[in-house]
Length: 266
Ligand SMILES: Nc1ncnc2c1ncn2[C@@H]1O[C@H](COP(=O)(O)OP(=O)(O)O)[C@@H](O)[C@H]1O
Ligand SMILES: CC(=O)N[C@@H](CCC(=O)OP(=O)(O)O)C(=O)O
Image (cartoon, rainbow, N blue to C red; front, side, top):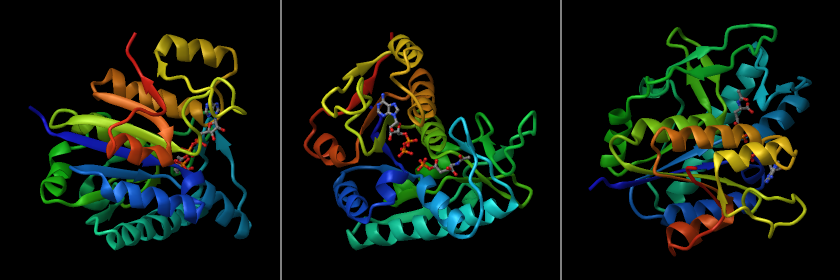
């Protein structure tokens, strides 16, 4: 029987709030067995870019990453956020090790070709190139990998890659070796039918239901790329995919209770 691997992604709204981040990391540190944390931090980059006088442009949830913005995302994702999380986890006796996709060539990617729009240094992960066994080496040696949303082009440049996409690609790459469970944690209770009502959680979501809720405009903004990545993982063989509140991770993975929205096949 395969060992279970939990992959957990946290987004910018949690990272940007130190109290919420600390609470989440305390729970994360207690989760038994092999685990991987993938972090975003788009909100922090937008704030710091603004302070530096750089304009932010997002298209379909992706940041247009010019050369100056690449310097900012490298500093903020690869430095500030990644290393702060690693230090906080070490304080909880969790043996975290921080990575970008360039480290150990873990996530090679390709700069998105400029079409009508030039996304600059935004990277698309090359399908099938993540070698799960390299990451398994760290897991087998009791390290807890913490991934920043940065990849590289193997020609000397880092690339900015959406953190939801990295989480999905890592879960897919490791699904041959492990029973993979992927959790997208954010600041709401799950996928909701009414954004104003935290109790309106869709407990089970099929691709068909997702399409119809999207058509009705009930699922929008950042939830669209998140669910596209989440369904991609489910279809590719990841064993379970859940979208949930960051505060629910302890309840689910330590107390073994249900929370949030579980994606289900038709
Ligand atoms: N139906 C929905 N249920 C929950 N959130 C939704 C929904 N539709 C849109 N959203 C929005 O999607 C956001 C989450 O996407 P995003 O900001 O990219 O997450 P993250 O913090 O993980 O980066 C929520 O903050 C919410 O505003
Ligand atoms: C190319 C691209 O858009 N990269 C993302 C990476 C960070 C991210 O995904 O952060 P959240 O999870 O907090 O949204 C960005 O720079 O916003």
